[in-house]
Length: 208
Ligand SMILES: Cc1cc2nc3c(=O)[nH]c(=O)nc-3n(C[C@H](O)[C@H](O)[C@H](O)COP(=O)(O)OP(=O)(O)OC[C@H]3O[C@@H](n4cnc5c(N)ncnc54)[C@H](O)[C@@H]3O)c2cc1C
Image 1 (cartoon, helix red, strand yellow):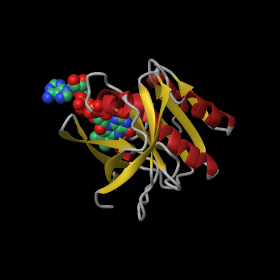
Image 2: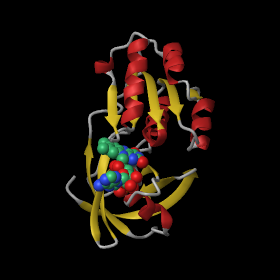
Image 3: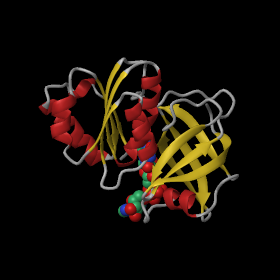
Image 4: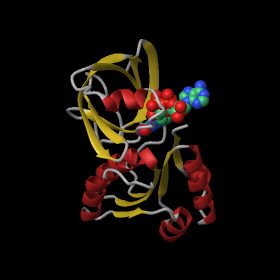
């Protein structure tokens, strides 16, 4: 989809320094959980564009992104600080190849705001009858209600700072997904290799 103006339908706090943003789904926009969009707006007169990954299981009737707010950042504080509901931003995409493609066994490794795609993919895969394990690393976990709902629906969900130990325990040949910032991605791929997996076979989205 080319650049399209969409309305911000809601901005919700989902944990410390993190918001979920509900966006209108434009006509002809389709995306899989784990794909990302380019979001553009003006912040104090400057044009700003950033990438954000879908955190909803689908895009029917709207879609969601989850943003970890860096207080020194630009777009994050802009979208979280004021009441943006009803304003418009420009969205383009979807992009990316690290997304859910109906795999039946998934091990999702998420760091920080990488929990967004983890819950979106997890919800979709559980609904499809998949076997889902989420290993999520964050000092201050977010989306706790959705993580709990995933557990209740039969997924294995671990919130931990012992990434390598848990990858070693839970990796059993599943399709591995990795979402988060660069340092986390490196640690996750090292942990996967340490557990006997192939990092080249993982679906990886590095937030930068
Ligand atoms: C494919 C992809 C998917 C992504 N998905 C997500 C997602 O789902 N959720 C999410 O939260 N993030 C995601 N990101 C990251 C996101 O795009 C932004 O980078 C992030 O939200 C920060 O944007 P910002 O405008 O708030 O901060 P920025 O203005 O980009 O600032 C970030 C930090 O860098 C510092 N900084 C900025 N400019 C400079 C400079 N010139 N020199 C030194 N330091 C500087 C700032 O002080 C601040 O601490 C994704 C990134 C990629 C590439």
